[in-house]
Length: 109
Image (cartoon, rainbow, N blue to C red; front, side, top):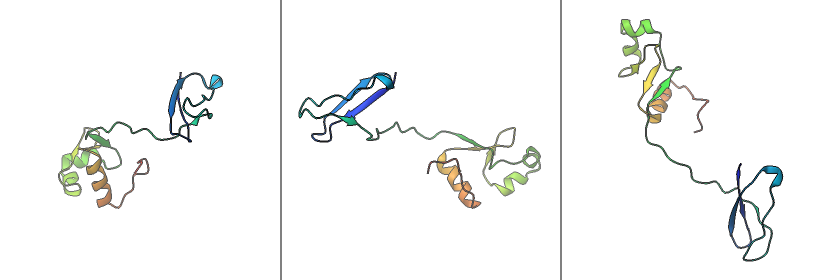
């Protein structure tokens, strides 16, 4: 069941209710007796630390790793057995994309 958040925009009182969408009812504020509306205030999400990422777009053919050409094109980069680039974190991914004037269209930033 989804959790719905409500807010009174008169006195900033908030309330939550867990119910099905078709059973959703707007509560009345206990302070000022006005009907509360949906609260669309974004809740701060969890922020996670750095984690490794795999990039197929920045990858190379496995034969380029064996020949050393990958090291010349991407100095200091690490690759898995498929030729995908292993990145330390999002910052390194953005930096390597910027070096090649590429844009990550799947990114939210």
